[in-house]
Amino acid sequence: MNLSDQIHALRRGVPWHAAALATAIGLCLAGVAAADSPPAKPRIAVFSGPTATIQNNKPLITSNKAREKYGLPLRKDVWGHVLMDWPRYQRLAAPVTVYIEMYTAHPLEADVKELYAPPDGYVNAKGEFSKTKKSPSDKPVYAATLKPEDGLYALPYMGRQANGQAWEGQATHPGAPFSEARQTFVPNASRIFEEIERNGGEIYEKADYDFYRAVPAGGYTKGLPHAQRTDVGDGDIPPEKLGEDFFSYGPYAASEGRSKLARSVNFVQKALATGKYAGALWLEGSPSVEDSAYWLSLMVDTSLPIAANSAHRNRGEISPDGDGNIDQSVDYILSKVWADENGKNRLGTVMVQDEIIYSGREVQKGDAHPGGYVATGGYGGIFGSMTAGAYVTEVPTRKHTWKSEVRVTLLPAKLDGIVRQNGVFKTVSVDIKNAAGELLPTAIPKIALFKGDVWFDDDGGPNPAGEKGINATIDLLLEKYPLAGIVGEGLAPYSTMSASQDKALEKAVLSGLPVVKTARGDARGLVKVNSGNLFIEGNNLTTSKARLLLTAAIMKLGPLPHAADPDHPTAAETDAIKKKIEQYQEIFQTH
Image 1 (tube, rainbow, N blue to C red):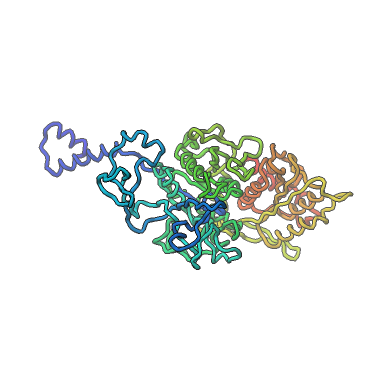
Image 2 (cartoon, rainbow, N blue to C red):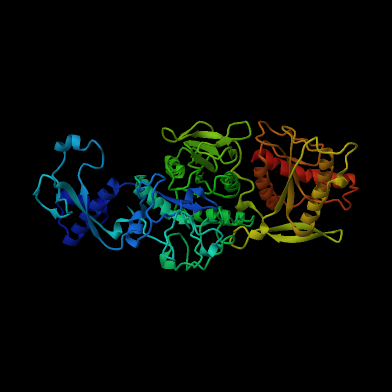
């Protein structure tokens, strides 16, 4: 008898076995509970990128509490006044009871003290607590027991240097090696989110989060046992090296190499393919996040939203803008304003910054202050606003994420590259993806950048042989990198470089290297496609973003066919090159 039959039998008075009756009632109650329960709490994947100010902190300073305890000089201003301590978030090792003076959370609490419940007790001038008031000077207090499991609390920073001296706000003493320095970047965003929550951000009321160390800014130089990990990952973290495993700026700056482009894609692709997430956040340094946002939009095959964030102020400075950007990215993902009629992401990767929803393709850092981002290209670039809730005013026609023609799932497992050895061109097989479909670090093409203008050449006719820098770069790319290309930035809006530069770059094309031409600066228009030349026109992309699209396109299409003698190409060889360029051009017109 099914549940419906059992319920009807109850109504007819049909006798049942007690167990059956209990089962029926339990199922009914479970059904009611399920109907009344909220939907599953959304979960968001958070990826840590390199040189991320949004995950950076002002260095810890030894508090006056510690200085007083250990007999160190107190921190004072130039007039000799003792400075107020700046408490830093830390964890309690054991429960502690504190007495909090009533009516001190706001200057006007005492103005309406009649609206408040009675105090827990009173504290006298000696700091002694009693349940009753014994003197007119006794202060009414709350008694609160703080526990380790409560999480972070703002407390005086008691740390000192190994020699017993105070930390004065520096990472280490001047000239010290990195091994003797304190890191200010956190290894993943879990700590940042916990502090945002403690500051009243209420982000854990909105969603749960998993943290991934994709290309992080902080690292575990001594390693970390698996049981202590706060990120998603298996096993212990081995000792990590600056410049290999994590990438920061400042006195110990180390930038990420191009092979890490593969790592960024693989982390995001693998996580979002699990089906566990409502979307993803990517946190990175403000100068480079604009390029990573576009790269992920080109490469990651997902219908879920990806929002990038950065900050211009370190955490710990007044009004750290990164915390607000993170909070608004969470709101953006949960709002689903990014979804089309089928629930798929229609905007690609965006950058939610300073209450604006920027296109990952067009966003660019225009100046180093909050609000300093601009939309490039002259045709939109701002999708909407977060000022009064997520609101979209513009939807792109460009291909991205699940619609991108260069997304990682569409790339071949391998393709043929070319090298030139002793003047002879050779075909070299290049693995693009492994058996699991992950992008290989060794597959990322090498792209060179050049800048030029029409005032560059000497008097007289074009002299491409005199372009020693371009010619040397062509030789380097052909001899060392089976997959490679060039981006040349010229005048707006025609991407014009000097005649000598253009002639030298034509030889690169005839040698199998795809060359993209872009307009300098924030090109406020499209570079006109010219089928008569041998170049790929970069549309209205900035040079750095054209580099990324060319990187992806080469892994999709491979090198251009080369002329047997690049100095004297045949008509058939030139036609074959132009046909391949048309395939590249189509990608640049649509992405």
